[in-house]
Length: 220
Image (tube, rainbow, N blue to C red; front, side, top):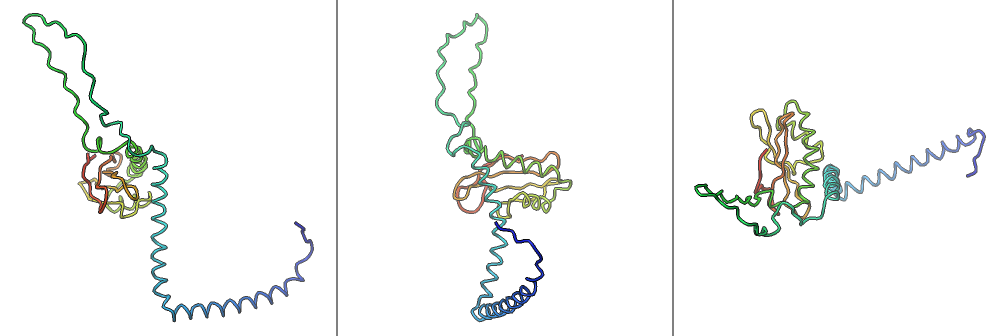
């Protein structure tokens, strides 16, 4: 690039004239534009655009948060907590019982998991862990966990009001649910309790479609 050295005073007068002319043209253009909008009914449209612009950043932030966690977790489907098949039979020789002794009771097979343990897959648990970690850390900082302060805290973390449910005071604690379902599918949600240093959040199961509703949970 060629650098021009020297005084710029000789260009000042011409720039002032050009700036004045551009200002006049711009003012006329804006006046005409405003007239067209008022006559064409654009005022109502501008109100709708204002509302959309207020909602869009909040929704975009929430979606970015969900996308980040989902990309860091495995594909949906696998569930390491669900039994994969029947257990192998015990082929060992039975121990000899001496006369008069009571034979040991049969070993109790562990009950199959139920609730969130059975219904959520590895992806859900991974995504939930990311959400739990940041939410718990923020709630532990609340000295007075009222529903209002909890909602404000969750909003600040990127969870819009439509993701926050069942916000209710319970003594000195506040309970709530978070809708963590993926856009277009999933059943993941979270049950939380804001209680200062002992705040906690655990996974729960929601309906797959429609309005948010918890179908299975273990409350913290």
